[in-house]
Image (cartoon, rainbow, N blue to C red):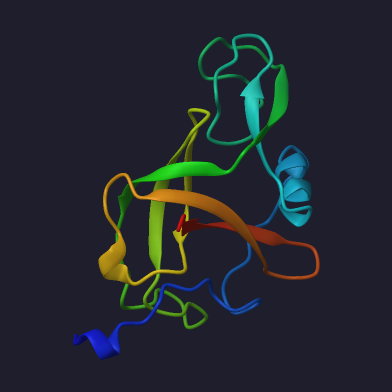
Length: 145
């Protein structure tokens, strides 16, 4: 691919891909996304950061779940660039990624707003939210300028 062929990584268009199905337990996360806030689960008993809303903490067995707002800053830990869409609603290229948030969480999302060639280990990122429907906004991460 020549430099003139480089396309920026972009979020998929609203409604053009399979939608997540929020659960009752995950509502604080989805509500935060609609409000432009990244709100993540944490164990009330031991303080363990959770990858998702849990019924029982995987670290200590507590059922106490709290929610903590993240500043949404982090760095790129791992990624891949997808050139062949798994579903017709996905726009390629896109880059699913694991982001290490400054507060210690690992977060699975996608990187937007840069050329695929710009992705590198430790790239500084900031969360941004894109509407997926009237009820859902999804978090993506953009390189910090």
